[in-house]
Length: 215
Image (cartoon, rainbow, N blue to C red; front, side, top):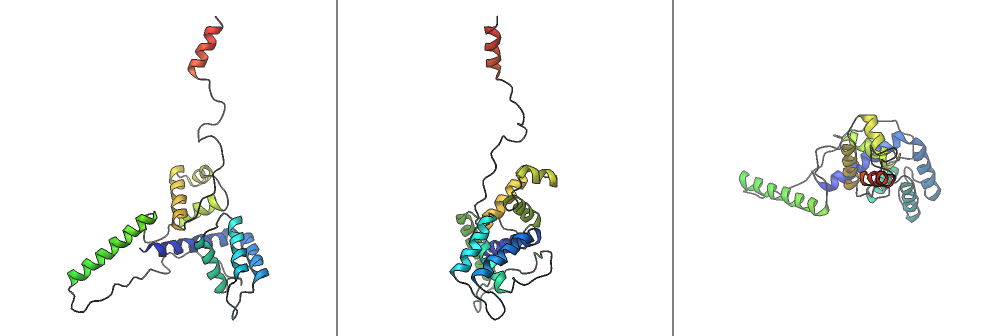
């Protein structure tokens, strides 16, 4: 699976979910963009003010990154400012296509050898970019966790508790989505680690000193 395809497919899945979960925010996006540029049939295009308005909206929702911003631009150019019916994401809607040039007279073994070399070349490029391991589809559960954490600002503990999942699994999935779209996650709220609520008991050596003083 090509890394760049995964990046844009993930950005599309994230924005699709935000549109369904946060219609109020999407309405604000329409208003921001409508004030600086009139998207519409027969009038597609963008300018600096358009990018600035989209960037400002993304910043407000903790989604400021190139992949999300371009997904929004593409959405508007497809007429996204018009009302659209809700739809569930279809991970199989588009499949990536990569062409390996044909060499006349080449044997099957030679072609497979070249295809294998191309595969490992792309995998090595992914590792140099720090990409996560790609799978055939974008996991909708991971996208949901990402939006709930990054956009709705729910803590990992709450997401894990509500979905009966392990906190580390949620955290790992959210980080993977952020890595795919090259987005910096918002900082977590300061506080004690899970299970450390309440007053701490004094250290044993302090208790021992106090008892010796009282003698």
